[in-house]
Length: 140
Image (cartoon, rainbow, N blue to C red; front, side, top):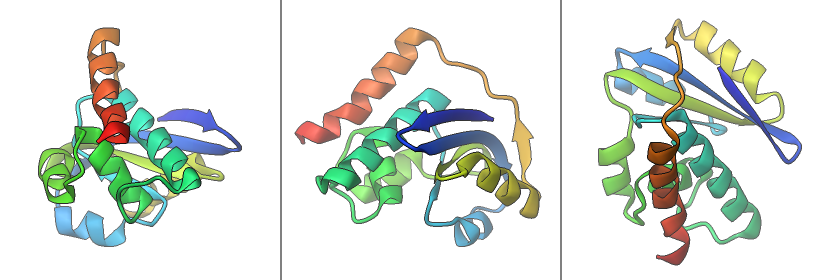
């Protein structure tokens, strides 16, 4: 699990295997998002930008979860964001944000019997290009 301190909160990310998409989506909590992306760094950056935009009331999506998705793919179209970065069968990243997010995420994974997969860092160049994609939403 990767854990980042942001303000007074945590952003916790784990890589999990999803077998039943509708089941995991029905159990996902308001302070969590699950996405099929290349790098955990990409999800962390998109989550920070989504939380910042919600604080400033400059978010483009109605929810932080939606804001994370549109930032992952650099679009304002939620349907496109779901198609490109939404959960898929197989390996996905799940993020929890807020107070004690790491404990909360561990409990969620355990409660839902999700299999975790080791997380590897992306190359700096790949992570940078994916983060640029997340930041472009601010100028759209």
